[in-house]
Image 1 (spheres, rainbow, N blue to C red):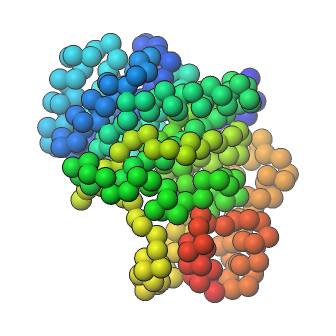
Image 2 (cartoon, rainbow, N blue to C red; image 1 turned 45 degrees about the vertical axis):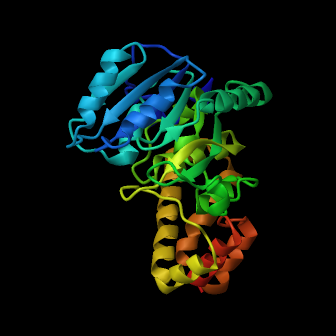
Length: 330
């Protein structure tokens, strides 16, 4: 049934299949993870929900990560698979490869340096089951949660990542997501219909979770669970870290100039152009209009930029971010 949503180039791509069947595939991309990865794997192994398989793509680590993973595979061969890439892929492409190896009904994503609460799968899966009951199991669906921010030793910094980041998780629409992502990949679960329509993550996607969130909002539904299900570890090697959005932070960003904000918006516009190109043969005229309106922002400044934001609800998440956005394009 989902094939009717899919562009021909996605349908015709060769899919990598796996022999081990599980209800949930947990995907992890590792790279030089020797310091933290054992804690994360242990937290997954300690889950109250047990019908899952762990797939890890190692991105050519140069430390002891691969040896650690091999030891886990020896102990848990029935639920543990590892692969080392033949070349460096980076986070986005690494997860894209993992997604397209999965044949499970549901997919969860794991960073290599966090720690899951032992009921993370249960909580997320129960919400997914409720969504499928409401919208049907053929509908592309995404569930994500909050997370607790800690230091590198798992001492709690803040119990709610989304609160300190001032993320608006109550009004998640495609229009708003075009301007900025609020869905953390390490907290989300997607169902197979969403995985199938996403296909391989587009090369112009800002990040894999951002692309998946856009696709879910456009073709299906997103549900947010307002409770943390994991420890989000902060350390010197974080690719993306938690930031506390405040007036002081906003002033600091203003000092850095308008250039950074504009570059971020232009990256989102390039992503939107690729989204339109990939799905244009299945979009309604109204949906196409929304995307083209957003893409047209690249040629607008001053009042015309702000007018388009307001008219089309292309807001960022939170008041301070929107002040910065308007300031950057005045």
